[in-house]
Length: 246
Figure 1 (spheres, one colour):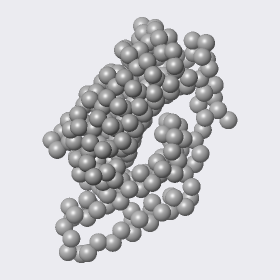
Figure 2 (figure 1 turned 180 degrees about the horizontal axis):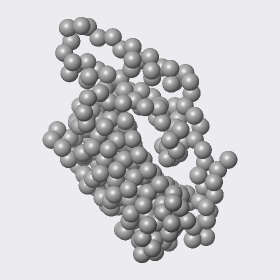
Figure 3 (figure 1 turned 90 degrees about the horizontal axis):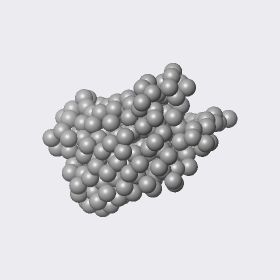
Figure 4 (figure 1 turned 30 degrees about the vertical axis):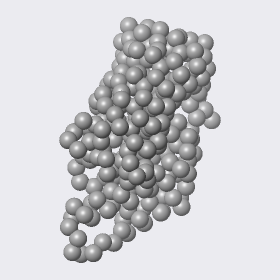
């Protein structure tokens, strides 16, 4: 069953996520572990091929589970690991095209890039987010992100999943005025000052962050939330003692 919380007179609910099917689990395992490449291929080429397969499977999972996977991924049970090979990855233009299936970054509307050890959105070779004016849905969950500054250029962004990263500051997203759904569970966020700019926001998950460690920050949080007239779903559990958590 779900867990209900009451915040500022609004009922908030978290519901356990359906498990990933065994068939999909086996498909992922077989493809990732059984990918056979010619012996004379360079290691870098093998890694790139495996990366493309991993990205394809992530996109497949997103299609299978749709909004349920995006909105409830704050629970660890939904995760099926598709670890990237090698060190931290770069979200390059080519990576975006492979993951989205589009022919140009200007045409990308949905982008899923999870489990890729992505730590930086500004490193050399990273795609120019300013070119992605049509991007509406973005999932960068299960990475190592800290700084979201480049995402402020995504003027059409409506849904974003940033669960399981190392984010402390969400404020760059507050320039994305079309946002309706934000999932940022399991990060290090201690303040959401400015969130009230996102007047279309309907769903917000900040499960397991650091919002309840500072009583003043809690008052700031409630002030911002009170100005979001369209907000219908809110998860603030596991945010420190000032919010009734750990």
